[in-house]
Image (cartoon, rainbow, N blue to C red; front, side, top):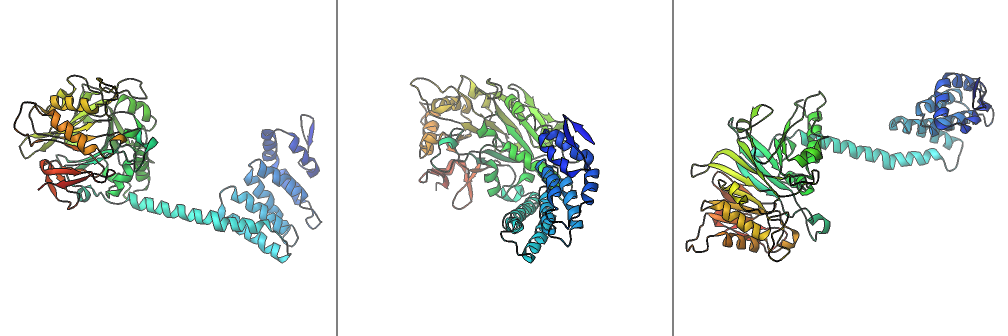
Length: 507
């Protein structure tokens, strides 16, 4: 006998079970779980040959299903099935047990129960069989969807186990821009608005080719995959600040990293090194402590602070591991997660010797406004990735968060200092559509010394698009039509299609 709040419940008297609906849900569940054994004994005494003898079974069975007590409901209808194999209750028992199994995610067993129920309904000529509807739903929706999931999972595992392709698809010491428009563009895009970042391959001291993703923003991974590369080709990520157009694909990369560590056939634990600003640390701090199934750390994080020189990560030399060290430069651009100008610029000091015998330095401005002397931080660079952002909005004023046209000119006048330099102009506002080549030419022309009569063929400003590819060893750029690499001084930009720049050899 069970008395609660003056409500009569007796596990040995099924007629009292109707009072369950007068109890709070948690109390109802607790009572059923506590007395399930006695409830089953009571049900077992009921003669199932009597008409409407399924009433007590449904009284408690429906309550179990409504309260998410699916195992208890299954036990109740399994007992009814056992007792009523030759009675009219058999189809009902099979149907409701099917429901309780379906709600546990045991779809195959549920399908078998619905099938039994439907076959019984056909035998007794029941019209509008609920079991038939359940079978149709499972055959047309659940099973095909599960098959798609299975196929996708197989494809994912297959993709994750593809061997590294970086050597064949990109090669050593190459730079690929995966960048079109800047952050606001996806909000009002008139065409294909792919953002992205950059991908760099460098050969380290051991002869290994390492893949470096830089500022992976919108659509980075989709474009990356279209090149024929995958998660196994990324070894490190460098992020200058926390805005979405520089970080949108970071979570996807880290998610794929976790899946790779769970599903790769070699049972290897891949570790990514991540370098980021203070805003990046705050934005992704919940992901940076990720571990694989075996408890191995998946991510090493290193904070980028302006003025610092980074030569190691997790106790391992960067020059040995990746073929570069990092000098962190100031950038005047507010991060969302710090609400401060904690963004950074970078110079990657590589161990790669150019054809002139110098060690190659790659500058990455990130997003920044121009401040006097900013370009001097990059005066030793032979390649600079220059984020223009937009064009001046007010007369006589530099932009407050981006270089803009005038900031880019002043920056390059400070950084160039007569040295050979390839400046890759990127991070355009979409208002530059159809004008990227012209803007780049203006910046290149006005960054030259005014009184000079000699043309410096070794200083060039080239606008970036998602298909720009540079071989860093000899400073050549891939011709879009022939796929042959030519010296960057000999490349001109074709912008007949404003959505996709083409790079062509100027004979």
